[in-house]
Structures are given as C-alpha cells and as structure tokens.
Length: 367
Image (cartoon, rainbow, N blue to C red; front, top):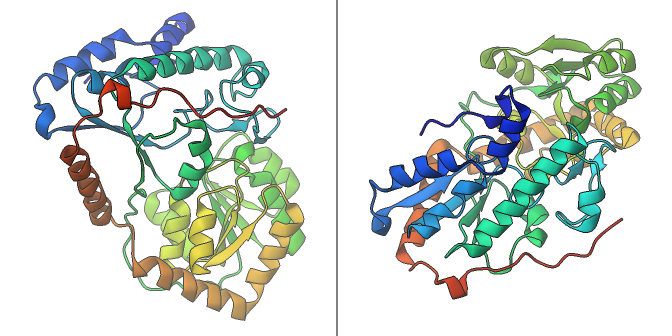
C-alpha cells in the first residue's frame, strides 16, 4: 500500500480531512485483501493514525477477516493517544471522549488539533460499533493493557505481546566501575528530563543525555555539568550505556514500553524508572533497579544516591543481567508469540454481529 503520513501535507484542511477519514487507504486495503483468503489470513495492523485513519479499522471484519491491532499508544481510546495532559504536564485523569475530555485542552499541538482528533475518535468508535467484529487488541506490555482497559468495550479480545529486543549478550557490564547516570531519548517535558538533570545535581552524580529536543537548554540551566551528546549511532549509544552506573527513565506519562530500559538491563545496567511507565514492571520483577514516583525530584535523587553505593550497584547489576537473560524477549520469541496468537484467532469462528462488543465501558468523569 502507498499511504503517506497525512499530517505532513501542506494544506492543513486536507490533512485534517484525511486524518479523520481517508477513503483512499480504505480502497487500497480492500484491493489488497481481495488477493487473500479469510479462512487462513489474519490482518495485523500497527499504526493507523498517521496514514490509514479510522477508515481501515472495520474493513477487515466487514470482509470476513480476523483482525489484530497492536496498540503502541492509547489512540484506540484517547484522542491524543497518551492519556496525558501535555499542557499541564501530568496524566490527564478524565475519561476519554467524555464531556470533561472535550473541554480539556490537553493536546501537544493546539486545541484545534485536539478537536480534529476528537472527530477522528468519534468516527473510529462509530465504524467499530457498526462492524461485524471488533479487532483483537495486542498490547506491548501488561502495564499498557492495565492503563487502557477501563476505556475499552467489555468482552473485547486483549493480548500482551512484548516488543522484540534485538540485543547481543556481551556479558554483564561492570556498572559499579562507572560513575555517571545516562538518559537516552527525546528531550521533551513529558520525559522528565529536566527533573533528571536536577536530581543528578542534587545527588552529586555526573549525567549524560543522549538525544535532542526542546528541553536541551532547560537541562543545561538546571545542571550546567550535564553532558549533552545529541543523537548518536546505535553502537555508540550502546557503549555509552554500558559505561554508565545506571540508566534513568523518569517519564511522567504512561510509557507503553521502554526499549532502552530493556537494552540497559540486558547489559547489567540498573534502571531507575518512574512508576507510571511499563519499565517499572521490568525493574520491579527482577530487582535490577529502583522504581520512583513520577515527578518526584527528591525520590529520584535518593535513588541515585542508592545506586552510587558500590555494593548496591553490584547487586542490582547482577539482578538486571540475570533476570533479562533468563527469558529474553528476542525477535524469535516475539514471532512465536504472534504465531500462537494467529493460530488461536484462526481456530475460532468469526464472532457474529450480535457477539461484537457494542460500547465502551462507562467511566465516571474526573475533574
């Protein structure tokens, strides 16, 4: 299929029109699916908000195909896709598509863009409600499932298939031999990067930021000793992480995954993660780091002071490495999980329209 990102169009009205409902991608998908047999084919979608629009969500079911959708975000329920108020810089706390939601200017761009996304969400809900069957939803972490489940229809099929992590076992990196903390990712407010810079300064710990974004200058002001190296090649990023005491993941939004955290743990680098992220589950299960409340500068600084203790660093490093490699989320494991999912879907008859979930859970509004 040839489908470009509609939001890159020069004409904002055309972008909004195709973002809300793109008939062209629906026709393309219908033509593509005409070459396959629904009896032995599963349609698996990943990203639908940038090019496809809601026009494709109900089509596989209408044509008799089993359909799975992987949720890398929260767009299946939330208009801005994050369950987060980007202007107040905190989790939103209101039910998606409720009256309070419509009144809240939470979008990362502008309120007008929020209204376009609301229209898209309304059409997505309408299309799915009229479809013969809802798609099966695939979450990239159990954390992401827990966050969005209250806003999904009762009875919808849900599965957890973690993202694959392509990493080579190079042995445990001796984290206890290094002094600095490291952050890898975009330098944006919802990632908690300024807080990380402040906490590192409070703890007297060197910190390196790998990445770029609008918060770069604020980081320098918060911690003049912080090292900002910009974006780097994957091999260099891996070496920076392997020569660090710990990795920080201080996001204040509901991160659905956390690939960089998995890669750090695979190398025996302890992770300090916010409790509002999927990485908190990775850290908490194996003892390879510390989980802290989001937006809590003192808690983050305290965690850094703990990791600075050599014996604690050694213990967490070994725990991180051993836990990851006990059952690594490799590409092969990911493919096997998908194969099991597809086999299960194909073994069941398509639900009849009467069996399809008809409405989202009723959720009280929160001011």
